[in-house]
Length: 68
Image: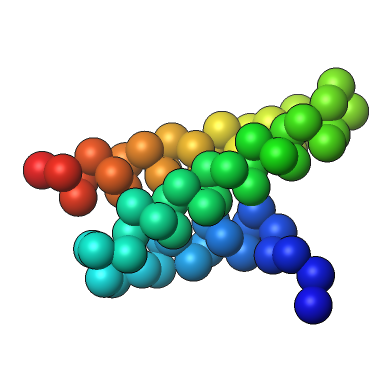
């Protein structure tokens, strides 16, 4: 079975209701995004960059709200 994509890990994080599992899900998504950025290098389209930026902002917001 192939590794999940960053989008799949991101989606798993944003629908996680168990607050004890949320940091793990967010970290997995964040790591997958970083790996994707390394793999794509400078070939990332503006649309992909916007999608990733939005995802990263959402992941940060999830963790901040959990901490509040």
